[in-house]
Structures are given as structure tokens and as C-alpha cells.
Length: 605
Figure 1 (cartoon, helix red, strand yellow):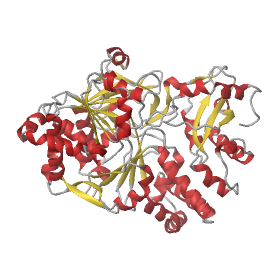
Figure 2 (cartoon, helix red, strand yellow):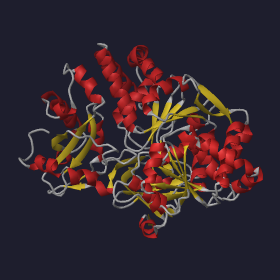
Figure 3 (cartoon, one colour):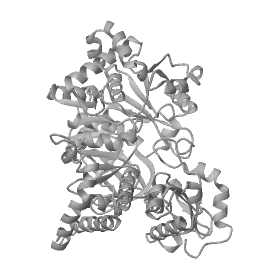
């Protein structure tokens, strides 16, 4: 199979827009809770009813109008994930304008590029520090007329100024856009070159979300659905969820600082989660370390093996046998229940995207009672094009196409996409837009395959394919993902282009190292010392050996180098969405790469 499409379940009025989606949710039950925010004490959550949220959106939209924001104008939002972000997003749309997210970690140069490329008129930032960053380039952003600071009362200011604007004006503005109009410009995270602004329309969001709700009702539509958003709202996945919760009736909460995530999960008690694989890896690794600290490591490993075996047995027509079911019940009492409690106790589903989760973790979480539904998508496709379903899951795949979406596998293996969710083009960049499409299909740059039932699997990134000196084509993603799952590892970059064998650069996880060191009686071990520690190197060697089992010998990693520097957003080696800037790493760590090949391959790793 090389092409498949899924018909829409829900058809939309071409004259409608995101404001109509919001109005439908409010009208369905004005008194129902739509959002919850941390109360003043920080111990609980204060509900905000649909009618109350609608009133706050209208009041904020009036303020934007009073500030001179016109229909089609661009309004920037630079903030962590918090209630005010969601409020501003819907207020911008209520004012007939276009929202432009900016990562709160962005440098002054990145901010300047987005402000000028998108012609942002008004920018709302979270903190005075963000304001200071903008001030560095304010004179280079001629369209920018205002900068407001959330922590300095931006929302209250907008509400006060908007009192002079009539409600009829917001009613008029809310009806201006149709499905074809641009709703937001989201800038790609830019692993290479300057970020490009993807123009996403009202149809992209509306059609995809209402159809996704109908396609996966067990997660997104049931009574009592709740989710806690902690991913950056500047990222397309979080923005998609911000609309999905309105379409599906989910109660939404926000966690601005991931340091508070476990506490927030415990008190908010979401029914489903949305995250990237790295979070699920860290939850597993930290649980393992806690078990070791409490002298229960053997029990944890036994329970983990039971969970994985149980999940694998679910894919067998005969299901788990009696002995495995009994072991699973015991493990649930000893371990699994505690893990689910750490996630709030109510979460039965999680949606993972952005990178492969890996079969081991997929089976582990399903085995403990939290089914992770892997999906796939890009900024240019309004986040997901495909996702596994609760009733139809193939671990290791990214599922089947959502309604209104289509996929084709090109002759060279590239994944091509088409449908209501595919963006209109790159803002002000016709050349890049032309290059992004072939015969009406969006070129993702990813490589993959479809099985006979239409499940999509991702095998690598087209631009990252390594060709060894022997002519072997190697997709590094599988090796990197498997090695990164080790608790000691933060990042892994596979190398070997035009080289005699495959190697890897590995960075250590400063959060995972202390727990691992304690488990192995190493005491306080710094990252610098760990990079040359014999036991650490032996553990990494074993991780590489396990990863190599998934590939042929010609594709296997023969040597690796451990770096004393991790890759982070702050030092420029990760994008804000936590993707490695491979070109920057290879440029700055040339000497480390050369050292891998200086003496030929090692006997094993």
C-alpha cells in the first residue's frame, strides 16, 4: 500500500470560523466548567464556566480593538503555557485578528525575525525580562506599536481600555473570517536556517479538531474529560489541543513550569495527557531510580517486565494467559497503581508526538494501564495527520489517518500529505511554498511506510540519511531514539556520512545521572567525571549494543564519544521543540567526531 485517505466525518459551513466553534461550546452549557486555574493559595483549582470565559474573551478582545488592532492584523504572544495565553488566543480571533506565537525562550534575534517577517502590530509578553529582550530589537520591528506585559497587568489594562468598545463590534468581528482565512502564523522551530512562518487557516484547525473528536471519542469527547497542558503553546501540538478541548468539551488546565508538573497532575487529575516521548522516558527512569533508592529495584524490574509481557499478549488473539494475568494483578498492587497515582490517578490515555516513543515504553505504559496513542504530524499539518486509536493500536506505528487526511508514500520513501489540515503556505515566502509541494501533496521530508491496514510507520528523516563510505544508507533516528531511552543519556547524534563505519556522539542527562550514580554506589558524580568514568562508559556501551540489535551490522554503531556538554535550547543545539540542530552539532563538535575515526572501529561499540 502506498496511498490511503480517510473521509471526513463532519462537514463544516465554509462561512464559519474558530469563533463559531467556541460559541457552540458555550451555548451547549454556559454554566459548565471550561477551564480551571490555580487558585490564590496554589493548593486547588478555580473553575471558570463557559459563559465566564466567553465574557473574559470579549472584554480582552475589546481592549485589542481599542489598541488599534484591526481585522487581519497580527498579534504576537510570547509566554509560557498559562491561562492568559489561551485567553489571548481566543480574544485575538474574536477581534478578527491573527495570532503569532513566539517561544518564551527565543533570543532577541529570533524575536526580531518573527516580529518583522509577520508584521506583528501588538505583542503581549509574559514578564519584564521578555520585554527587555524585545527592547533590544524594538527599533528593528517597524510594524510593532505596542508591547504589553502579562505580569504587569496586561489583561486588566486591555479590559479597562476596551470598555469604550461596544459588544456589537466584537460580534461583527467574530463573523468576519471564513474557513479559508489565516488564523495563525506558527514559525517552524528551525533545525536549519531561519524559521519559516506556516500560515494555518481556520479550516485547518476547525476541520481537524471536530473530526479528531469524532474519530477518538473515548479520549476527547467523554463526560468528565480533563487535560493538563504543559507543552509550549508556541508549538503547533499545544495550539491544536487548545482548540481540540473546545471542540470536544474537555476541561483545560495549564502548568507554566514543569517543575510543578507532578504536583499539578496530582491535584488537577487529568483523564488524558499530551506530551513528547522524552517526558514518558523521564517518568520511567525516575520511577526506576526511586525504586532503587528504596531497595525495590528487583521488584520494579519484575513489574516492568510483567507490564511489557502483558501488553504484548494483548496483541495476541488468545490474550494474556492465566499466570500472566495473576502476575499482572500483583504488579498492579505493588507498582502500577503508584505510577498511575503519580499521573493524577485518572489518566487512562496519553497522546505522544514529536518523536518515536519506542516499542518498549509503548508496551510498558499500556501494561500499567495508561495507553499511549502515538501520532504523527508537523507544523505545516496543524499537528496530527495520523494517530493510533484506543480500539485499534499498533505499537511502533503512528496510527492511521484522521478523517479528512490523506497520505502517500513516494518512490523514494518520503511521506506526502494532503487534506483539510495541510497549511496554506509559508508567510511571504512563495519559493519555499512551491518547494514544499509536489502535485498538490505536501512533502514532509520524513521517510516511512504503510502496512496493509493503513498504519503509518516513520523510518527516518530524508535529509538526515547517512551514506557510509561503503555506500550503506543509514537512517539514524531508530538508533538515536533507542539510546536516548537510557536513563544516563540526554541526547544522541549518530554520525558516519562518507565514513567507514557508524559512530555516535552522546551527551549525559544531568537529571538522570545522580539517580543512576546512587543506584550504582558512585556517590556524587559530576557530568565531567561521568564522561570518563569506566562504569558509565560500560553502561553506555551496553545501551549501544542493545540499540544495535535493531539494525544490521553495517548500520550498527561501532564507536561512540561522550561529550561533557549537553545539548539545550539555551546553548543553541536544540530547537524550542527539543529537536537537535544536527548541523550545528556537527559543526561545533568536529574534533569529537574525528576522534571516533582516528584509530578505526572498536571491537564492539
